[in-house]
Length: 203
Image 1 (cartoon, rainbow, N blue to C red):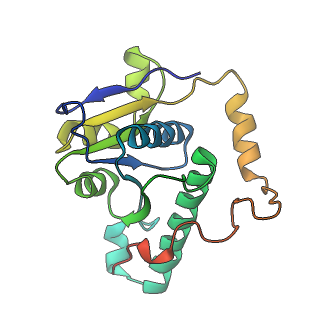
Image 2 (tube, rainbow, N blue to C red; image 1 turned 60 degrees about the horizontal axis):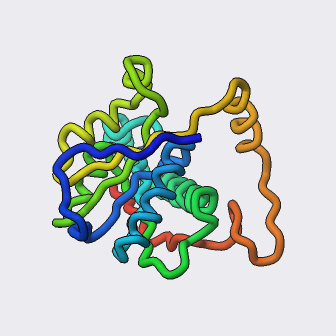
Image 3 (cartoon, helix red, strand yellow; image 1 turned 30 degrees about the horizontal axis):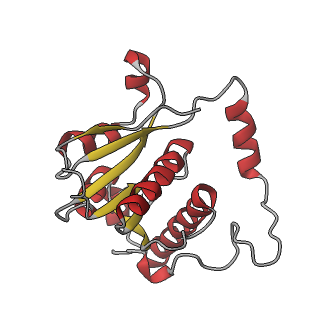
């Protein structure tokens, strides 16, 4: 069960949304945001851009000391595959009848999301920890707080599902299990839903 989306940042008049940009990580909250973003884009007849931001696991500062392009390409491909899996998990695949783009972007999450959502009329959609009150605010990640505080466009936050005791453990266990693929049905590791050239690898 999820709560309703909430808005922050500057407001947009009805019909003023020109593009919906959604941050994706593969978490349950980000999948809820992806579904809400797709519904908004379809309702308004505007493009949907799904963005997964990635960095080298050792961080950019350490990578700069020992740059390795092959290492960076490997993590760029991993990010593209995680974005593809999130699109499959959240939407069942690339949505039909909707101008859709998936983009894996290298950078720090807050700065990259602000940089991507830079067009007039952009609406940025992000998932957030469910619930209200002080405990829920503490669970919200610094990335969400930083984006909401300094984004140059309106930000819509979508709460993730509230799980029953034990459900998170079951979901984590299932996420580690291979997903069977039948026929041409899209699934993890099945074909390329998102072209690799959309990844951004530098350094």
